[in-house]
Length: 250
Ligand SMILES: [Zn+2]
Image (tube, rainbow, N blue to C red; front, top):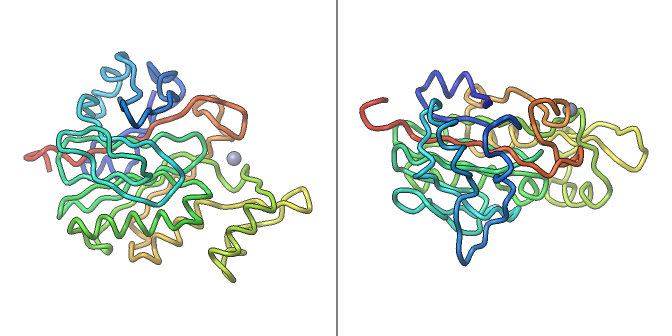
């Protein structure tokens, strides 16, 4: 029903990435109206995620726009705005990122404590969302060297073929280095893009210790039995949630 990260579990961080078998999963794809925002969860999802330690009545979420802007969740949870990075310093407020191939990146410094969750696809990568997430947490008192990062199931280099417009944007944003994140594709005018390698490198460049980046390298397009994949034509989404441990539980 949901996937968990061994590293985050070991730290006592409540979290989950839903599979396509999570109750209420159809509601996750509902668009968020910024004038009347409400979290896209059906009533059947909250009990399903309670065993993960997540209280969905306090969830912080955003209208994701493929950018690199960050905003804090309101106190007690709620709508953070039209941004792709949501942060909180409040224990037990889960942050939610919705994806269907894009990366959801969870970042936290338990000593501060502060938590962030980022939605990072190819556009977010080009716009520097991983670095922006690290900087946003630093503004809330985190130290980059203390951060833990986890990359949720997302499209892998095995399945992520991109065309010329994407290649051009990457080459402009990361001249001379994005070759390391690609390999040839079956079609001559395409490449296979490794968003995992790119974002791991960009996190490390922003000061995160590579040994503290957890990436199970689970490809959504390779596992249709578990996850939705936009690339494969699915219109469903998965949600990655994480919360700072409740006070007294750390
Ligand atoms: Zn794959």
